Every structure is written in C-alpha cells, then in structure tokens.
Image (cartoon, rainbow, N blue to C red; front, side, top):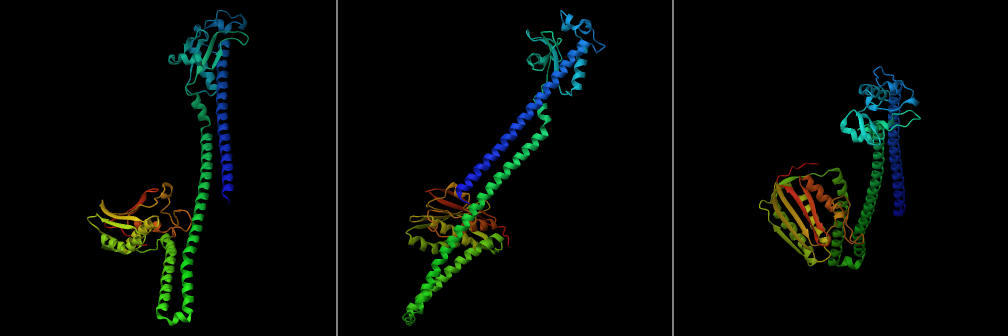
Length: 429
C-alpha cells in the first residue's frame, strides 16, 4: 500500500472514529439533560400537589381554616406562617414519595420579592432555597401570590447521573474498546510495515554480501582453467587461496543468516568457564588493531577492573566484544577512535566500548537491539551487515544474566555498556 493511500485511510478512519465518539458524547449529554428535565417536572408536580393538598385540606391536622375551607377566589390576607409545619412536612413527604423523590431534600416557604424565608426544614440552606428553580406559588390557578413553596436537592446532579450510570459505564467501555482497537490496528500495521521494510533491507544486503564473494570465486575459478595459470605454481596457489578465502567469507555470511533462527529458538548452548576478561580483550584487540590502523585510527584499552575473572562462555563474550568493535569501526566515517574500558561494579564487571563516530539518534536507540534493524547513513549498502550484531549482543548478555545499554548523541559518538556478572547464572538452551 502506498504511503499516501495509507495516510488518507488513517485520516478518514480517525475522523469517522472521532465522529462516533462525538455523537456518543452528544447523546450522553442529551440523556443527562433529559434526566434532569424529568426530575424537574416530577418536583414541580410534587410541589403543586402539596399546594393543592393545602387548599383541599386532605390532612386532618390542618388548622388554617381560611386556606382550607374558604373558596379560592375569596381568600385574602394570606398568612403562610399560620400553616402547621407538621402538616406541611406530612404533605411534602407524601407527595415526594408518590413521585419517587426519596433522595435528600430541603423544603420551605419563602417570599420571593423580599427573599424572606418563612418555613424551612434546614436553616443552613435558606439562601439556596430562595434561589431554587424548584418552586410552586401558594395560590390558585388564576390567583397571584408572592409566597412560594420551594425545594432544593443537594445531590440533584448526582442522582441524575446515577440513573444512567450503568449505561454510561457501558458506553465508555465500548468507546474505549473502539479507540484501543483502532490504535492497536494502526500500531500493528506500522509495526508490520517496518518489519517488512527491515526484511526487504535484509534480503538486499544479503544479496549484496553474497554477490561479491561469488563473483570473486567465479573469476578466480576461470583463471585456474587457463593453462598459463596452471603452469605457474605461484599463480595457481594465489587463485586457489582467493577461492578459499572467499569461500570462508561466504560461509561466515551464511552462518550469520542461520544465527537468526538459532537466537530466536534459543537453541544455543553456553559453556561456562572461568577466564580473565582482560586477557581476552587484549587478544581480540591485537587482531582488530590491524583493521583500525588500516583506516589510520586508534584503539585504546583501559582495563581498570581490579577483578577481571568472570564465569561465562568465552566464545560468546568474545563475539560480543567483536560485534561492538565492528560497529564502532563501521559507524566511524573518519579515522576511528575507539576505547575499550572495564571497571568493577556491584555484582560484576562493566565492559564499555566507546567511539567518536556518527552517534545514534534517540529514536534509533529504541530499536537498535531489535533483530534485523540497521541504522542507515544514506545508501542501503554504505554500511555492511545484516542487523544482527547488537541483537546478538543483547541476547547473549541477557543469557549470561547481564544486560546492555547505549548512551549516544548524534555527531558525538556512542558508548555501549555491557554488564556481566562475575558468577553468571548460566542457562543452557
């Protein structure tokens, strides 16, 4: 899939997902508003019912006879303070219960112009009662009165939310699953895309690495067929040596490829032994110095560890060092300046390989220990390799009970620190 096509699909999918989420939140808000409107209507009906009960005097405890027995049109000089609190409490309780308004509430009677509270069930809420939207006039339908029966509900919004709580939880759960699924799909696709690019890069590099020795062997073989070359012992020996060397090089490349399966399946076997790490470092450095000097570089060895003896697989530790030195050399565009340092730390020894090369960006540092991952410096083949070196270093360091870390800045070089326990808990695979 082309990059632009994929980008368009992702953007359209993201817009569609955002639209679905927006609609869900829109309906949630409407549902909450509907709950609040229904609650408000129930309260108004309950309050009006209380007022009607006061006029009809349905309760035997009513003592305010002018309100209860007089005709609505003839009521004058209304004095709400004469209403029995006991009667009012009884009527409010009955009407609110009939409307399923059982949550905590405060009710009272107040004068809406003077804001004077006449009766209230809890004096702490006097101000809130006067400002409440839940109110009903203490008057007939066609009569005007400045006195109101009001109520407030401290947990009103909580109750409205609680009524649709399970639907909200289900909605958010489904939205979360949808967002997670979309994100996971995009992440997996990008991961597979990177893996596909890495494998393609690996095949290209493998083809490039194999072509050179094969071409050299083919050319040397043709030369050996010539009578003049066969008649000359030195020339025959020279071309035979070339064939042998290139064949060994080809074998090493094949071994590198096969190493992927071995590391993935953990079929390697660790043969631990006690050996002096410093002695091994100097042996490797003596051989590697030839390569460094050929590029007019320098390799420094600083063996500061007081106790250099470790229990580990000598071959794999040697390969760890060789891989780190090889990387330091490959990614130093100028004359390489490489330093190998050892120091004792708690529980083991730290082996560090530092260079003054091109360095590694923070983004690449997250991936350099992955299988087949290679840092590009331009052309695909400008730095040889299959992307197995650091992957091997990580696997082997962890197999010995240690670990590897990198510290690097672009343009300032890199330092790889490999921690190795003095007595490694070796596991055979």
